[in-house]
Image (cartoon, rainbow, N blue to C red):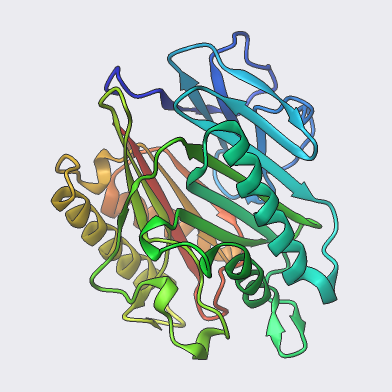
Length: 325
């Protein structure tokens, strides 16, 4: 890690001991809540079942972190960066798009009030993401609500990196990293930008960028890569072949690293990134997909394999990654 970055990532085996100091910006755990106190605003629980040896991601700051609750928002912050999380305990089916719109408007208002108005990276987990209602599934209605709050009013070059995955747990979970200044958007020439998808995927395009490159005020650099799947142009590839989808997805990630290099990031290989998450639709695919990932990327990089529903039914997996320079 460049010492000038405000925080770095540690990936360790999950444990139940709380942070013993005030330098933890976030502590991200996968799976059940048991033994993980959510009253601590720095704690984030991803409501997905781990399918390999679970890791805990910890964002360790250079300076002491402040944290607290403001209404429904849990937050932990530094002058340069802020973690925020919020959970909807229950999805109101007819009003889900409106729930999302109101949540996003509140999120942006809260971040502005803290002096961190620019989300860099957002993670979202939606109960039963393909549940239909009046001809649209929950993901499509989520996109509509998010767009009404954000996409219709924000230039495409200011959209954050993002992940949206379906969960079996009730409700909706969001957590985000934000900063006083925006990051540099990175798009993939192999793919149509998500915010320009044609109407066949839903009445409103998703409001996120493929990746963002963040140059911190002190000189550190982070790269956040959105959930990435086997999509070329705007079409899904290899609909019934999980391993081929993984290889196509990794090719998309390699192209994003090339674009990040053009934008001023160091030359990076996949095996030099700081962390990966592999979201798998069917748990019986997990073992061979993890083995294939390791054969292509290596055994040294931290990898969380998680069971989750991908936004399109024909997609069997999704990969996200980050580099903390």
